Image 1 (cartoon, rainbow, N blue to C red):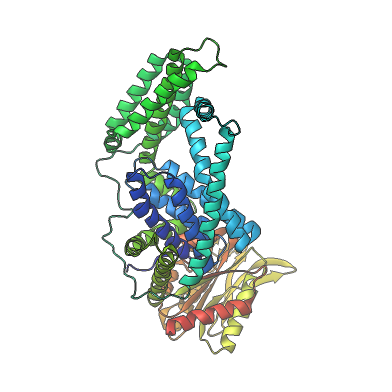
Image 2 (image 1 turned 60 degrees about the vertical axis):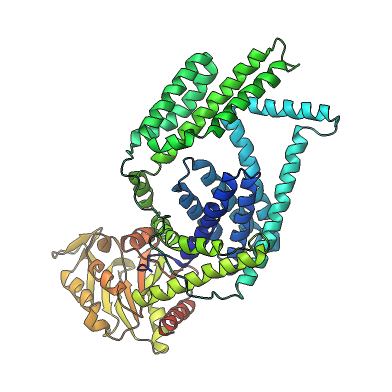
Length: 576
């Protein structure tokens, strides 16, 4: 197993849930798609609901489901499939919808059943929206005409196009509710199971973020061009003569094949072109002869069909090209540098766990005969993997906790109370405090206090005349900085189980203050590091030092007694 990454507990759980969901998409989804099994999207959505509900039963943290969906969607984005946006959007919609319903109704039977039913209905809604988006509004007319013709030939007057859609939705709703019930039962059963062996990671897995194909050239301007050309192409198809719009799309198609050689394999498949030809032919036969379309001919219908086929070709080609450009390392890096550090680390863990999840899923030979037991065993494997990961992480890196709040809200007072409680429990503590200094009701600076010796001296002041380090309105005393670093030195920390820093702010982020001490403190074994960080700086601090705090305590509503208990449990976990 690789060295532990910086993850909060909920992101670690979401990484495993998303990895398991992705393994279902890879193993089962690929199989069903390859054999052309009908309603594959609904089946995968139901399985996704089942896994998410089971994960919520096992771990039960708000925000787990949408995070798991985000990770699964991103893992899907770098799968070998050429078109990724549709599946990614579908997975995210299902996850957010299920999360929203369980937030509103609670993580209980009603919330899971209603959320699962709605989430499993998303594939058919997405499919209908996708057909209209791809082929235009004429696709709806074609569907209605075909249903009317079929019902007339069967002499069924009471069933219309809307009735069939409602029936399909009802079937999806029932399947979603059943999936939620199975997920609840599987989650409860998984809690009683233990994995037969300690799960292992396989770093040589073919499923990994890795690097893009070295031969692929990426271009940010081209990404913008593709996004711009899609609506422009729609306008061209409806306004230009058929031959002119066909020529433009053909040129665009050829240019994309030259720029993205990896797409050639997808477009060699005859199924895609057979589908487009079938749509054109059906439109010519059906729309051209509509009674409510005076003067219509089969050629008029064929022209509509060709427009639909051109539109579909544009959508498929443009989305395929966009999917490639989204794998541009610069694009990924841009997102990861803007508050998505936890997501980036979670993806690393998810890809490390993916072979374990895939292997566990593949070993369930009785999956379809005993779905409940199979899902429970796979989930137990995920829980065992997490336990193994956390145990390993605990022996290599200190556990991090964060106290947060805004200026003047009592962060230092909260930390002082916490330290008093730990001392009362005979837990050795060390580090530095920064109590505020007030003069005539106004804050004029901060002092620094060594937790071990209780020695105290001025740290910074407003309008300090002596030379020092200026940060905002304060000037820091260099000797006091040295004093604080001594309090955080390894010699002073020998035998201490809890070390605190009050506080980590802009000075540390720029490389000064206590910043140089943090890396060493993170390498302390069997200990806890408590950092005081302003709310607005939490993301920057956690990403700067790749932190995965086990707890974040806000002084507004936080309880130092609860915080002390969490630290005690973390320390007990080290010794256990």
